[in-house]
Image 1 (cartoon, one colour):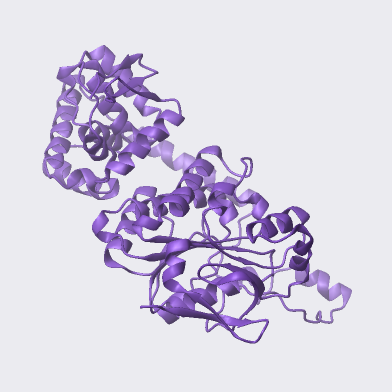
Image 2 (cartoon, rainbow, N blue to C red):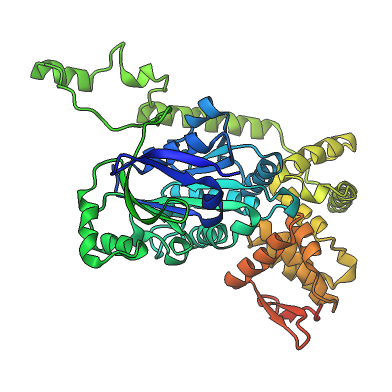
Amino acid sequence: MTVSIDMGLTHLGKPAVIDLEELLATRLLVQGNSGSGKSHLLRRLMEQSAPWVQQVVIDPEGDFVTIADHFGHVVIDATMTDRELTMIAARVRAHRISVVLNLDALEPDRQLKAAAAFMNGLFDVDRQYWYPVLVVVDEAQMFAPSASGDFGEEARRMALMAMTNLMCRGRKRGLAGIIATQRLAKLAKNVAAEASNFLMGRTFLDIDMQRASDLLGMERRQAEQFRNLNRGQFIALGPAVSRRPLRVEIGAVETSGRGGSPKLMPLPEQMVETAAELIFKASENDPVLHNNRVVAPSAKEVMQQLTAAAASRMEVQAQEVEEPEDLFDLEDKNQQTDEIIASMMEDPDAAFQPVSQLYQDFQVRCRIKRLKVPDLQQFRRRLSIARAGVDKTEVQPDDWGRAELVASQLPEEMRGVFLLLAKAAMSGLKCPDDMDIAKAYGTRSPGRARWLLTHMEEQGFIICASDLRGNRIVTLTDLGIQTASS
């Protein structure tokens, strides 16, 4: 069945349509300076195609959340952990639910990591869930920058890898990338080159006009026309749109963004004395009070509060002097704590549950045994060892102590895998297979496990090599040991 999406009119007055099935196979790149109408174009495309295909919107500015009210999209505020976002993305594909990932509340580096985690979750699902999905990424130059410098190196690398997977390898998994950027020069070339359909809007910089004309197969002298395009006008080319460059004017939309362009309005008439009083004195209609925000206390009030809190704390400490805990009793409690975590890991699904959920179960079990509940940081450390399936009696205590010390300096998601590799190397065992590494990582996807090993190698924590038979050997550089070939 052929589905045609109405995008507006061509310069000849004929309907401008996009073949949706062809678009799913060939992807789309939208380019235009700020104010050229990119968001309007994306909104028109999503509104027209919403009844026909699942949609996932990566929204850094929170501009597309208004689509949810009209078309039933679920808005996901990306304020959770990366692992939770990955799991949610897998459910999105399994249940075929259109969503908007709202990154508006995050800092730039956190936006990149959250978007990468979510896109990886879309990418790594089982084959049975490879349904067609339009993945719309606004401001794509943020997530696939052509050069480093604007963001942290780790965040940039994670986002760039996710975007590359989306555009280069996503087609077979049903993922059709629709990316929009303000400047082609800032977008990574290997990401832009994978799109076969283009809608080029107004742009003024020579380098962007030249890249746009090159992508459209136009002569350099024809690039000047990109300066003369009006808002909402685009030059279209591609197998899903037109076989020759065609000027298109995007039609109207049903929804609108939360921002919008600011409109001019006259200033209120105020006397100079009255205007100064409005600025320096609070009133009943003060905008801070109107927004239900608490007015910041003065420095004197803050010092008084701190002094009172410190005095109160000293009184409590003077009244309650705790006896030092017996070392033998502490060792016994630690052993009981490890036994509780080990019993939790006997559940086949426990290795794949979020840390927050496991910690709640752990707290209940500790209270039943009348044990003091370790804090979350200690629980994470012990959980990493349990997920790796490490028995400390199988290795030398001093060597294992060094491994735990190195693991404590790594990001949380790497600790269990690092300890699993350390155990294998210290015991002279073969390198664990992808599924064992995936379990220690907390995922069922062997692809995610291989990605983590690559990421750890890029960070310099391990070195992966192969023997003559192609079996994997992992060297742990900080410990100076390596696994046998698998």
